Length: 78
View (cartoon, rainbow, N blue to C red):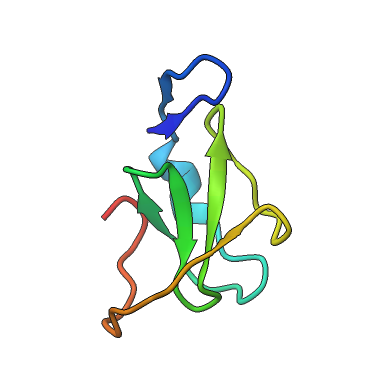
């Protein structure tokens, strides 16, 4: 679920949509961070926001993250 910024409610993200999405920069897989409501690209070290259940897949909107875990990336929703 992603946080709806306008109402403060959690909005569900379609799991099938998450399986189809890829990082626009690396074309690599994304993992879901339910606590922050973001899609994470470990390869690009970016977290893309999800607003009103819609992934914002623009690098200019993404948040830079530090990836300390060298383990392989898990699939969406895992």
